[in-house]
Amino acid sequence: SQQGEEDPQALSIQEGENATMNCSYKTSINNLQWYRQNSGRGLVHLILIRSNEREKHSGRLRVTLDTSKKSSSLLITASRAADTASYFCATDAASGSRLTFGEGTQLTVNP
Amino acid sequence: DSGVTQTPKHLITATGQRVTLRCSPRSGDLSVYWYQQSLDQGLQFLIQYYNGEERAKGNILERFSAQQFPDLHSELNLSSLELGDSALYFCASSPGQGFGTDTQYFGPGTRLTVL
Image 1 (cartoon, rainbow over the protein chains, first blue to last red):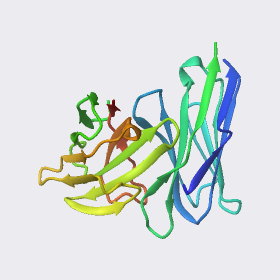
Image 2 (image 1 turned 135 degrees about the vertical axis):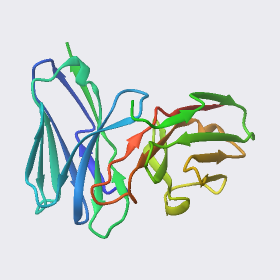
Image 3 (image 1 turned 90 degrees about the vertical axis):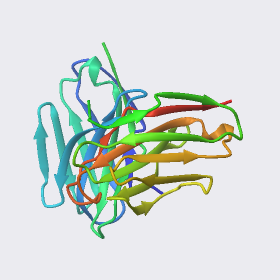
Image 4 (image 1 turned 45 degrees about the horizontal axis):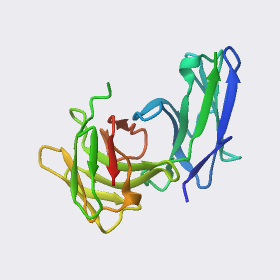
C-alpha cells in the first residue's frame, strides 16, 4: 500500500475559505513533499518540508509536519477557483527508498 | 512547463497491440520515472531509471517494459494491451536518485485508450 494517505478524499469549499488537507504515513521519513495536479495534467511540485522542520510557508500555502504522529497538513488560505485540483503528498522514507505518492485529495473551490 | 516532454499526447489502439511511449527528461536530470494513473487506481509507480540503469521497480506488469537510453530519454513499451491498460501514463524526471530532497518534474502525460 502507499506510504502516504491523504484525508479527506474529497473536499468542496467556497472561494475565500481555507482548505486543509492531511497526509498520514507509516514509516520514518527524511522529507515530505506536496504536489498538485490539475485534471488530466502532470503533477506539479508545491513544497518540500524536511523531517527536522515543523512548519513551512510558500505564498498562500502552509505545510506542517508532526513526525511523532507521522502526519502532515497542507493549508491553502483564501482559496480561489483556480486552486481546484488534486493534491498529493509524497514521502521519502528514511531508509533511502524512492519517493512514494499518496492517493490524493480532490479539492473543489466553488466560485 | 516542467521541461519534461512526452510523446504522443494521445494514443488509441486495439486490444492485443503493442505501443511505445517516449519521454525526454529535463536537461541535466538523471532519473526518469514512469507512472500509470487510472480513475480507479490513482497514481501507480511503475519503474525508475537512473543514468541508464534500472533503479526501482513498482507495480509494473510483465507485459510492460522500459529502458533509458544513453542520451537519458526513456521509452515505455506496453504489449498485449488489454482494456484495463487504458490510462494516463506520466513520465517524471529528477536530478538525483529519487530520495532526499530530490523533486520530481512531471511531463504532460500520454493518454492511452485501448478499444
